[in-house]
Amino acid sequence: MGASLGGLSSTYLALSRPHLFSKVGGQSSAFVLEQEKLVALVRNLNVPLSFYFEVGKYEPQFIAAHQQLVPFLKA
Image: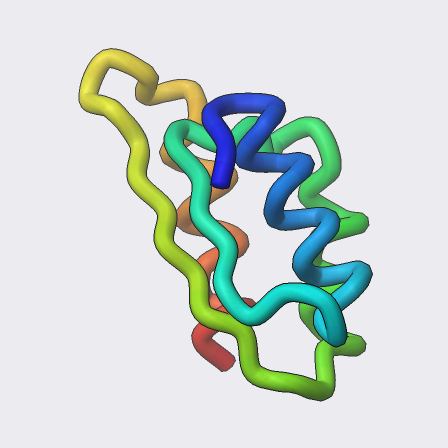
């Protein structure tokens, strides 16, 4: 789990090494920096992972990227 860039890093590590992680979380994760890479990793994911994300109400710049990534994770 991490905040901002830490949330992006945590998510990237879990998606790129799913054999090492089963759960990942982020607070106002900076997904916008690597949105396409994350989506590509999600599409190649073949094991279940659990995710927890939250975005603070004073950080609206992170909301759109979360809204784009979450449907890929749910699918």
